[in-house]
Amino acid sequence: MAEEKVKDTAEQVTEDQNTEKAAEQSAKQEPKTEKKDIAKLKAENKKLTAELDKAADAYVKLQNDLSEEKDKYLRMLAEYDNFRRRTQKDRENTYADAYTEALGELLPVIDNIERSLTFANSDSFEDGVKIIINQVNSAMEKLGIETFGAVGETFDPTLHNAVLHVDDDTLGENVIADVFQKGYKKGDRIIRYAMVKVAN
Image (cartoon, rainbow, N blue to C red):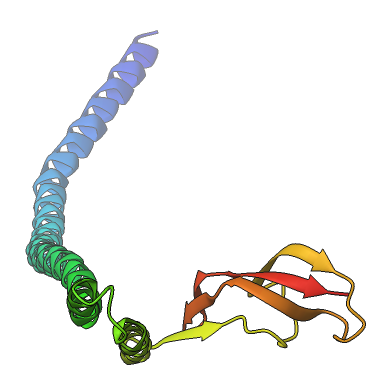
């Protein structure tokens, strides 16, 4: 029994010694592991710092780009607003210029009509009216206004407004027999449709 106790004690001592050795070895290895971990953390920290710097540079670049685009947008908006105002003013001026030009051509006609009233009972009255009509036609020509809807023309529903129909063997089919009001147009735009009587 004493031998067994000695054996147990010897085993216990050996076990304790092995544990101490393991602890010593572990203690010796810990600083090495810590040094490796610290080096690894420093490397990761350096890498993350570099990535953060890159991200910061990219952020600054994006902010500058955004600022440039915003500036371009605001400039374009201001230019468009100026263009819109200028166009509106030009449109108003064009209308006023056209109106003034038209009235300028008709004012001499009005003057001559007023003058003709002083000769209403004279023989030259008819000649004066003819002169005024010629002057009106000349003013219309200068403004680029054409007349249409004469007797003998073929009826065109896009130009003429037929208010009467007559059967006449002396005239062809769809021919204008009489004109109640002449039509006027400028280019393709109809100012007034001709009011006519159509035959057959």
